[in-house]
Length: 319
Image (tube, rainbow, N blue to C red; front, side):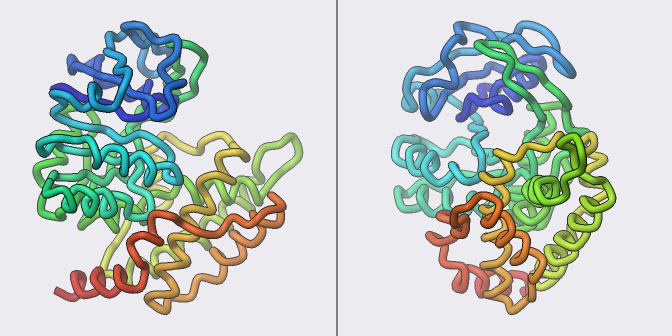
């Protein structure tokens, strides 16, 4: 397939290497431009995916989207709204779009932006990207893990059955269908894990496993109660971490970028559905104290209107 990856950070480069290793044609585009600096015609991967894999670097978004069969949006959740608006303004036709991770129901925002232009494209909502990775420099990337399993919802939900085999063909990873994009957004435990790691430090800069486990379990219990309000059952903590290949290393910078975005999403839906979320509230408050700045707010959810959205999702669950 002809795959365009929108986002040239570690996950974008590693996903490009993984897809190219399976014979797919891959184009890379960097929203800020700097991500593809140093990449000519190939990505050099080390670790769980190893080798030199051909890619095409697109200088602008129009060229990146031209002739693409599948688009993979591989940027952090807090930056997805800006990139989605750029995509929706330029895209032609109705290519399949995959969003990884599908945080805060961002696939619904992209769908609304496309529909406003008369475009109806199937949008896959992945609970997590297909890889974990670290940029080594230039055109080199370290692939720390290839996911053992992916979880996928879709917009519209009926497209999930068609998109799951497509994701498996792209990345060679078994893909489990979820009910919808909301289930995929709630299934992503990585932001909660990053928050727990930031708040459960141990000597040496790592996280205290027992404290981390308790905090993550408490956050997940609130997430599960919220999911139950919408009629969803999600992967357990153990299954999620096992399929991801285990715990990621603590990353304080990432925690302060992604965890507040996800916690604000949970709290907004919790208020709209009257599901109490005291641990999520306290966790977000502590992250604000540690950072010394306000961290609340979720630009994607603000555009979707949490109360109206929650009513629509609850009606869908009841149906």
